[in-house]
View 1 (cartoon, one colour):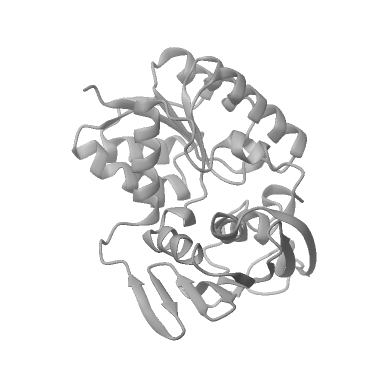
View 2 (view 1 turned 90 degrees about the vertical axis):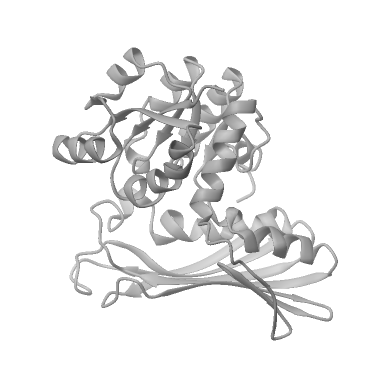
Length: 314
């Protein structure tokens, strides 16, 4: 069985911290080979290529996609840098992993989804909260309950500041850039959302230790198709800390309170599941994506075309 040949466009923060380490076990088992890297930062590109023993490096994605024979491509770029990478790869039959948010422009996102659908390739958007072991366990648990309300909390550090995550025009705000992870998980647990209302607070340049210009505190209300009501509270204000934060979902049913966190589920105050595997959600997601590429299984959640089906939800 030949290894899946993988390329990367963008080898910055998210690729280096999440996706490349997640692929490492698959590289070691010869299920994956890293074929080519592309990035505009030549120094970082050479450093990462040396670390992962990648011979083919490029600063132009068109050149890489023209010259390299790839089975799968990771696009790990800020959304405003998504240009024609998806279209070129899809036309060549290269399966796609696209970091979220896929786009800040709904017309562009719909066009990309149509291109992927017409090409018949596997696609995966980088929503990895579904891939915590606790997420599937919570979903199964809720199938035997009658959910009425969901409360979402996502509080996280303002550090590290990256050039694009501190600017509204580049990332769409803290909610779009990060909180969508846990909202996607809520949809995984409880189904589609049909109505949304929200309030937000804007952080302006000069407020805080780093120059910021984007909404950074949100309160959002939801109505699910099932009738469940919910709210999400999210804030990116902990600027004196780098690793502090909270990701939590609480679901109230007729006779229970179920609390989800990354690696644990509690019901009515008692632990009912604890993940002891040590696998990260990114590792679980990488295994699922590579297996989908190998089998050409387009049902993988969450595909780019799956998101297309919900383009009118909001």
